[in-house]
Amino acid sequence: MTPPAVVYNTDDGCFDCNPCSDSIRFKSDQSQKETTIAVANIICIVPKDNCGETVYSLLYLRNDAEATGIKDERLLLDNILLATVPKPLAERYLYAQLPPHLCPSGSRRGSMDIIVSTTSGTGTGASFFNNILRPLLSHLGVNEYKTHETQSTQTITELCNAKFIPRASERLPQTIILLSGDGGLTDMIDAFHSTLDSLTVPPTIALIPIGTGNAMANSLGLLACPAAGLVALLRGTPASIPTFAAEFSPGARYIIDEGRQRVPILRMSDDGHPRVYGGVVASWGMHAALVADSDTLEYRKFGADRFKLAAKEILYPSDGTEPHKFRGAVTLFKKDNQTQSKHEELLRRKEHMYVLASLVSNLEKDFMISPLSRPLDGRLWMVHFGPMSPSSVMQVMTSAYQRGQHVGNESISYEEIEGFRIELGELDERWRRICIDGKIIIVETGGWVKVHKDPKRLLNILLLQNSPHQCNN
Image (cartoon, rainbow, N blue to C red; front, side, top):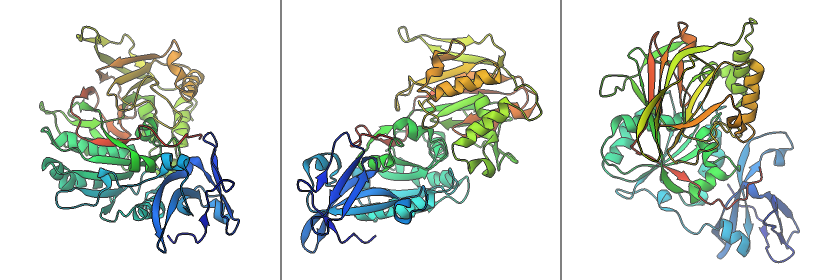
């Protein structure tokens, strides 16, 4: 990207920055050209040489519609040059040196890989990489990395087994920039936790969310502003990712290809049961059903709204029947925080509508399923309730979009757990689907699933502790 010819002055009268404002105005004293930039779109400011003089490049995200006049949600990386950097801007955005996780790769200094998921969300990963991430790294002088585009649902798992896990075992540092939704992160969690038991050097993952729900990213604040994920890449600090393990009865299978295929779960627990790992959510009932039903190309074109559309179909079946009542025995594993004693609680209810355990607060940007969850605190919270009228369920879901107010409903159970077990009593396989971080697993008739927190933390993710932004959107 060629820097603009105009250098903007930041003397009094040419620079307007109100800390509480949504935008910042710049004006060139040479051409009198003015530029207004949304605060939430600013990524950083980096020093640049301009014909022997030091100027400062302010990098920000610009909506393509600003240039074309055509309604378009695509964001592009753009920049303006500043003659000087006022103190308010310097304190918030000046980027003087690379953080350790972005240092150039070397024999033992670490490596950096970028994974671009080609199927996450509405398929914008490649565009984001080409239009934003790659030019941003070039501005920062970061050119030593390898890029991988996913070719199948197994690409990330294969990369972990072939490259990332061996490097971690050799105690070599590595940074992985992941342009993906929750599924890509889950693939990494499952691969590492299924393979490694000994102490390693955890890879540092920079999650750039391009999925549909983006539960992890939303819960970490990586979508609070358009630039938040990129700011976390530059200023974030590594924090370990808590996980859970899900074990299944022997006949459990993954459902793939829009529900048309079943594939085996290859990894087994010590007692021979299929086992997968996750870091976001484990569910059965309405949530698992709507995630499974909406995982099609037809639904995905609606973005996050696909979940709402699928939910309406489940609650208001087209054949006019009542919504399904999910049958099974649910046991919760709990621990007394004072005595640390553990106990089990079998729910008296045998019919259920919603059974969901979460390590994160938000399943979507505004859908706060667990308001007491804090980023990466490792606490597992369960939300569950029995059969209700469709209108009552919709009211519960609406309340979840209102900063988690659903947990105040007396019909909703919300509690911290160590894990749970479900013995499914369903004959129709449609109601025997389990959701683990967006992946769907079907359990055989009479089968079961058991979920428990895993003590190991084998991956780090960049967490934005104190964003320079006061995000207003």
